[in-house]
Amino acid sequence: MKKIADIALLLCLAAVLFAVPALTLVKTAHNTVSYYENRSLTEQPELTAENFWSGEYFNDWDAWYADHVPGRTTLLALGTAIQMDIMGKTVVNDVIVTQDVLLPFLRYGTWDTGIYTDKAVPIADGLQCLSDYVEGYGGTFLFVGLPEQSNYFWDKYPHELDNRRWNATAADAAFYGALEERDVPYLDMGAVYDREGRPDEYYSSVDHHFTYYGAFAAYQAVMDELNRTGINAPVLSKSDLNFRELPNPYLGSRNRKLYDLWPNSEHAVIAEPKSPIPFTRTDNGQTVEATVYVLPATNTQRTNYDLYMGGDQAETVIETNRPDLPDVLIVGDSFTDALETLFYASFDEMRSLDLRYYTEKTLPEYLADYHPDVVLCVRDDTAFYTATGNGAVWN
Image 1 (tube, rainbow, N blue to C red):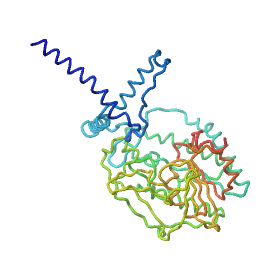
Image 2 (image 1 turned 60 degrees about the vertical axis):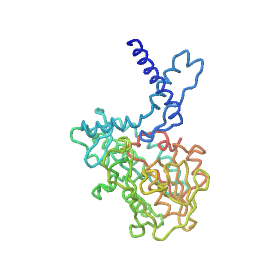
Image 3 (image 1 turned 180 degrees about the vertical axis):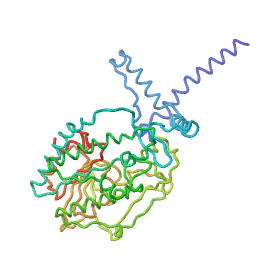
Image 4 (image 1 turned 135 degrees about the vertical axis):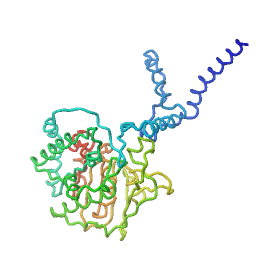
């Protein structure tokens, strides 16, 4: 009898050992992206003689199963809930959980902030070349620096955790100082927001971007600066727009890492001109729907920051067919998305490039082809010293 029981136990164990990988292959093999982790999942390994004999092939299968095991997302969410609600941890999945806002955990460390003086040189040199070129053909250049959410809400960090304000302040000062030395026109939106009292409503509590109100404040500040330098373009005021808060729950990049478990009452906001401005739009050379928002199909579907312009595009061109107005080119990454939904209203033609994805031409070649009246380079202050993508404007 004992022998039969032992055999039955072994058969059950064998069935489990077979069922888990079999179910993984059948049910999750088609999954390529982890929604909450916002990353691509490991692809099924391909067998080659080289990776077989090196053992890498079998290691790759271990990584694949770890990414595709059934119930993986549920288990990860459960672990997150336990850390937040039962253990009461302040830092979960590299996110600082406070009552009012979610912030990135910045690991402890100290270093000489004098390094930024040297690091700023090649970036500022490239921006100087860009600025000189634009001014050379009669255009206007402006670098727009934006605080990232963690730097905007630096005072909301728990006192026992490092907000690295000491580092961000020095890095920003060195960067803007290098621009001043080269006479590169710039607008420090951090200083603008400070003068306005740094309203909480300007930045998201669950995402690393600003809210639509913060984007609108930046749009107005940029347009005021451009018009001060002689650009004659209309500037939208709040009274020109119908602001609308979407009913959908807003996920955001920070709460996404917490599997949407942090209590969140934030909703995305959009705005549309009371007097509609007809336009056409092309993305990457293809005509697309003439809209600046990609809205969810239902009121219960989650929204994210990528509802603005449909997220990052390599190239977008919006034409409003008002030749009496100037043209603008905006260069930058995701922070430009919300801004683009406003800037098109002030120009005849708005072009935007994200140099992380746009590879058809160099930026100098692009400028030579179109000679936009205004060129805006938009960067958040955590990316000032990134020398690739939108930081490589004069390669």
